[in-house]
Length: 90
Image (cartoon, rainbow, N blue to C red):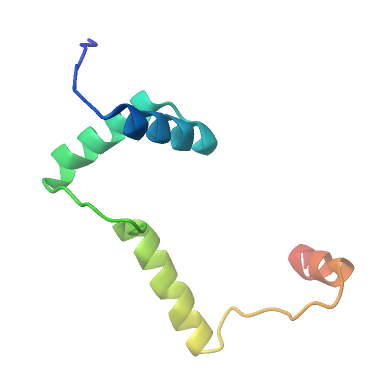
């Protein structure tokens, strides 16, 4: 079941948010719904001007950094696209 939520927002802020959402390929409605769902599930509100990785993404980054430091799962460098494609197909 859907319901309406009416809020007051600065017109410039709304327009900037709509433009950014459009650039990301989503509606402002989807962005707001996503924030509300995260607010409910995480029970917190985060205000930042830079992205914060979620737990899953942070775990992947940590694993990649550990692999890099251990010189594990490293391929390349490649000096041509053909070399890269050959390595990917092997």
